[in-house]
Every structure is written in C-alpha cells, then in structure tokens.
Length: 110
Image 1: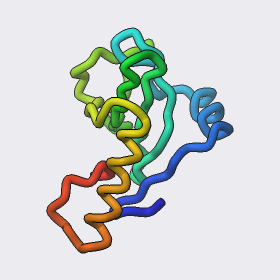
Image 2: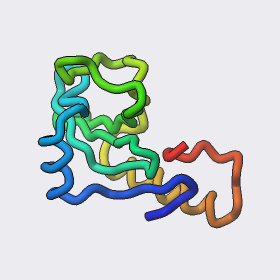
Image 3: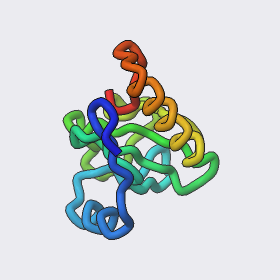
Image 4: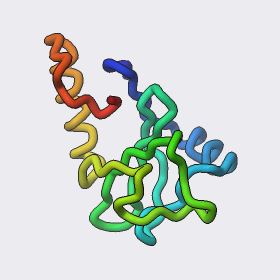
C-alpha cells in the first residue's frame, strides 16, 4: 500500500526478522508490542498484544530505551488508535483523502 509517504503491512516472517535485529520497542507501559505496519520512512506501527490493543506509531529516529520498554508518553511514540480494525479504517480514510488530493489531511504516514 503506497499512500502519500507509503504504508506496508508487515508479514509475519518480517516481524520475526525485525525482532531478531533488535533496536525496536519490546513494549509500551508493560504491554508487549509487535510491529504490524511501516510508514515508508522507517517508522513502525506497533500493536499492543494486551487489551485494549492500542496501535502506536514509533519514530525510529528518536528510538527506544536501552531495555526496549517505553512508557506511554515517550517522545518516540504517537498514539494512533485502539484496535487493528480501527487502524485499517484509518488507512482507508487516508486512501480516500489521497485519491481526492487532500494535502492537508493528517496522514498516518506523516
């Protein structure tokens, strides 16, 4: 999926590879996270594996803490939505705004 800056839903095999490379958050506020998408610029969208299943955008240039765990409110994190379905719905909205040339829409990819 390529919208504005680009999106990529991450395959399970890539999640394993990214995890092995390290350097990405293991969790937010004590809840483990897994990367589910990328924004085309190296940033990842992380899904919390515990309810309420929050989606966070992680800025790879700001990075993670040395132990891989980040507190809610960390400068590298932006809350996106709650639930994977809501995340996909936001991507659909991004597509719609992109198709109609809306350059002022706050795209997830930035």
